[in-house]
Image 1 (cartoon, chains in turn blue, yellow):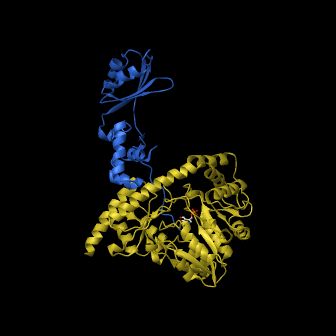
Image 2 (cartoon, rainbow over the protein chains, first blue to last red):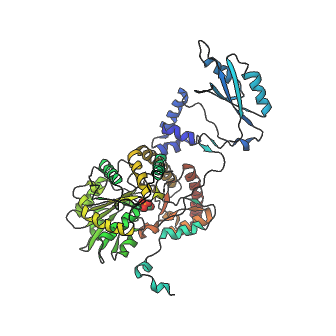
Image 3 (cartoon, helix red, strand yellow):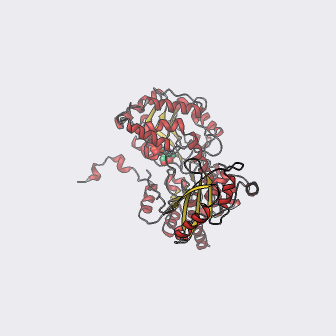
Length: 159
Length: 392
Ligand SMILES: Cc1ncc(COP(=O)(O)O)c(C=O)c1O
């Protein structure tokens, strides 16, 4: 992976100047590379990684397996588009294996999500079945450990 | 019992290590943000750990040959050939040791007679001088300077050579300064040594961690292999400190003598670690590069950040240490470190722990995540501002 992207994935708040120093190039070059990545859609946005339990105790996240029939002309494209058009949907991913789409949803209670799946998702034409799993606890997200980060076990050892 | 009377004079006279003293202070405190340790923060690459597990499963739990597994010695020989372009016979010129540490100890003991002078390039890792003294040798410091980027200059070397000089200990890339010796620098040193009977102990434990082109070893230079004992190991390059594995490569007649010490003191290096080390040498080039790139990023950031807060530091091109000058604060190295520890909970090591010429400097390790480094430098900034205000 490009080292600029890797650094931004770890901390998107690093300034162009800081990134420039770390990578041994000029701040202008960093700015223009980032602008280029944004323009080309390589970088889609900048977000924040949170411990959701601390953000809002009532947040409920669900992971839904969706089985579907691909459509003649568009394959899964059209279906994906329909699923992702709902604001509640965080992510839609086409998968290999025993189901077709992995969909994640966030809501404020279990019932709301269950109803959304029943009324909106499973009624989309082409969707054969859904299976809803609620998230109980998240341990690691995008490379960040959510709780109880491992302690540095290195002691002050030296001759 | 009067133990003091019973203890060997040479052992009693050994000074406790300056790093130790400071670490003992740090150990008594809670919540210390450390920039002190000298070992990598990365995990040993998974395939290396897997190789050790496999070795255990296969019951590889016996002693190996005294000089180490034959396959490992061949891999070491191949690695040296590839990285330095120099050939060592795995049968007679390579010994696998318990870390570079044992290699340094056995190497010094194999060549130093009472009264022999041993030139030690300072600031440096703290083990050389006590071991030389244990052998009855006389440690002679050569003090490198910040304005030379802590490189050893031919003039400095020449000045200290006498007819009793037996050995030059060459510790580059350097702990604590991060200094390196490039080919042109080594040429000047080799030029002086060629016509003499002086041996070289080249401690190249940080050889994989250089950031301005490939590491150059003195053994690559004409006429130097025959007078050099090369020490390296797995601790730093492969993040394998706890595996306790290193090696010595030296001319056969010297190796033969080192082997006697090694076999009486150690028998053989840890067997499981030896199997793991074969994997490290043969399948971890990408991991080493990844770690090096990461260190490099931190290094660049840290050097700039320290200069920005008013602690001048030259650009260290090797190892994982930065060695900023703290004279602008008006404090001694030890006062600086003690106050930084007590008042801001940040642990760094006073430069004078690595030799008197380290006074006025501190050693900062960047074997830490960027996030950790950033938090620590923020505390240091407050401290430096405070101290400078007090001074005015
Ligand atoms: C310069 C130098 N040499 C040798 C060693 C010893 O390393 P090991 O015995 O783990 O190989 C160290 C460790 O800190 C070092 O800094």
